[in-house]
Image (cartoon, rainbow, N blue to C red; front, side, top):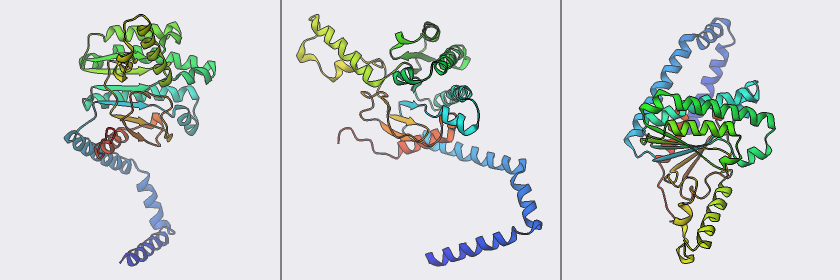
Length: 293
């Protein structure tokens, strides 16, 4: 039966190719394929499929905390034949979209990896300056966004923030102070962040408290370390998504993701769609989570 299907399929393909040799068929086919009606039909079909997927997701158990490694702005720019800085700008705009999708799903904790300590050491100075300007405008836009306030989103930044320029720290202060009274959702931006650095800083605090006599040696455990992490006010991520095809963690939330589910997608961050998010969530819901089993 399988061979018959393959044989029939080849014959249908050959017949279609034969028909397309004639302008009487190929020209109308090309016009239809490139028409606004065809694209409208495809777009409508995609929206229907995405909405159905969203409805299915809401019937299952959604994660409490999603973290995203937003990778691929520069590769998106190269592939689109646009400037590097414009690629980063598209990435900033995409974050607004994803924030809205997360809020619509009522997922209370959302964390993004925006700037690593490695980025700060390795990226050219002009690129870093462009990124700093984007963070300032992005934080100010979020702080002023009516939906952020109507939905009760609290904004915070974590990392070695003291290593950032003062203009970026001022923007962080504005966003945090203007959303400090909110408690429905918590949006966390990791800036000047490194997972190893976070663990080192936590261990230093533990060592300092022990040296002061405030923490007995036998009391030092994983809970004491967790309480001194930058993200001590967050539950550990349930789902970590990384875009742009790389399948590694890159020093992101190393302590916190011990039991997180990981999802990797080839899509560059600026091209990340609502359907891509829903597919990651669908994958998450299909897994049986294990904690040390």
